[in-house]
Length: 89
Image (cartoon, rainbow, N blue to C red; front, side, top):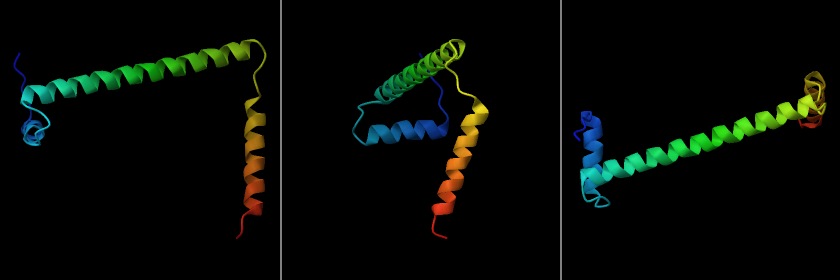
């Protein structure tokens, strides 16, 4: 397999080899691909976690355990106002 790199990426690969941490450009590229795959897997786990939380929230709403959004925002605003009154100024 041949891969074309921009001059900047080629310099980066050479610099990585020059550090001595990698024995060849191929090792640098393999490590980069492993890290990219790991990052992609982490993102997928995060997405799945978010989907699970959304599903749990929707199930909670369907079972009548929801909270009125306007009431929540009113409570938050009241807390912020109370905090602002207690700040030295």
